[in-house]
Figure 1 (tube, rainbow, N blue to C red):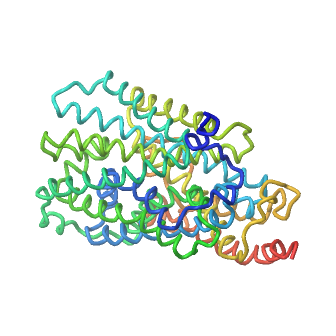
Figure 2 (tube, rainbow, N blue to C red):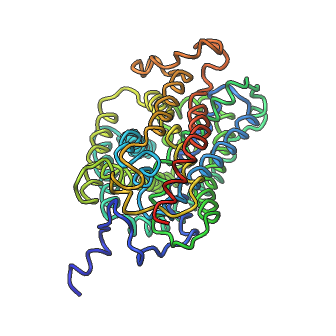
Figure 3 (cartoon, rainbow, N blue to C red):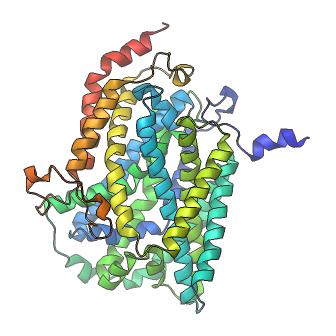
Length: 483
């Protein structure tokens, strides 16, 4: 067999074009593996500290975490339906709602979000490595961080360049490894839980609860929602929509629900641990472990973070192509990998702090991302037929060049949404202090609702409701063409 015949199985050549009919062999349950592997990271436990940081009780935090995680991954499942119907990446399928060229507006937001998320995961892996090496008695300084950066970046870039089939195989293996060590961590860290201290945490206001809920939704499902259809585009045409939603939701939500609740118990038991998580989430969690388990903990923590980053870089490469960049898919993944590497180096070696700016960045991009998601979900639920695959790539086709209704909804929802969120990290991210200009109507930037981040909810719900009614006629006309 020639190298030319072998290469397609080694490196995925399919870019943003429609997946050939013969390659659509995946089943809904296959979606469990990439979503579970990408979200089983012990980093999920760190969210226990983040959620309690909103000043709410354990029971409030538990309800917020379960609801936020499950609902946000359910929304990912809804968008994954589009992947089955159109066999193309998420941002290409979104052209049906925004127009072939209009889609570039939310596409840029999506690309920035993916790059930001995956750089963050790579940074976490490097810092965790340095912390654990220090605990083992070594020097977790510049040399260790440099080697860790090179190894982590190489793993992410190589896997994302190889593509879908390699990633799916990798995720199915990593699921078992990371899952087993995560269970071991829970067993070993459980004695550190002080239930009396956890239950003594006072309840917070409704605004604090909603703020925590928005943070959880943005940090989990909404953080992946812009790539949800990328992993379902290889699904068979006859796959059940309900099954795709179910397996997407179970795969994405199962591990985080368990990990965050356990993280709440740990953080609520130890205020010092809760504070330490803010600067080095995974490294702080490692301090609870005996020395003999630190190496397997480190390896699985890094692999889990790499697993999540691989999904994002693979999809950010597809998004880059959807913006009109005419290069092969592996090259697009490689370019985004280089950006990730540069960002990781800058934060690890030069930036004084990054968690605050990252969370501020997350909420800022979370508003327009939520607006885009609301429009696309309405579009998906309104449509009764598969997409016109040719028209997704032709501005003269049924989806047109620009859908100005969607673009207007997106702009209005984002503008109002940004006015209803505030920068909770004003000192760390002063460049974001322009937000919150509408909070004066509900108590101001120091009021009870200031940190509820209502703008994300508003953008999601407003854009869905308006698009559901405003675009119904246009969608119907599109689906009647050619009948």
